[in-house]
Amino acid sequence: LVAGIGEYQAGFGKELSKRLRTAASSQKGYDRILLELLKRLESQIDQDVIIVLDDYHQVEDSLEISDAMEFLLARIPNTFHFILMSRKNPRIRLSRYRATLEIAEIGERDLSFNSDEIQCLYRDVLNIHINDATVGRLLDRTYGWIAGLILFFNALQRKPSGRSHEELLDL
Image (cartoon, rainbow, N blue to C red; front, side):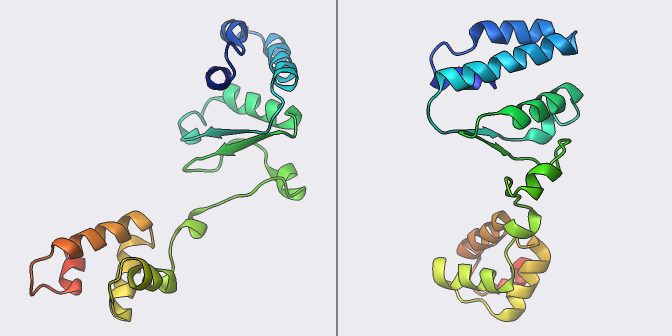
């Protein structure tokens, strides 16, 4: 996190990074450094900042990282916004943020297409007509995930003449 901010704010937190590595042995020392990080963020960055942590599930098993995230989220200035992308719910207590409407959660149901959206995608965007039965099978096979829908579209583009949509779904 400190290194990422340093990419956009030259020289930010170089000595903090070193101290964070050595402070891991003492929770009290770790908290002091996190507070110092927060003070520097407030004093050195005067604009809205969006911090994106992709693949957060990769570090989710680290109790230290989860604790640090909770510590920072509880104290971070309002100009800082976190986006956590993860394949599972993070080990961070989010109920407070849900209660105060400070969190937007986008889950699997929000990302997957339903039958009408699949039909619209193929008809209006990809300019291909597929019947309702094919839409239903596509939904069953891809669970509505856009990557699967686009892969099917690519297969349609390369299908040998005489082969139907349904035959491609059986592959």
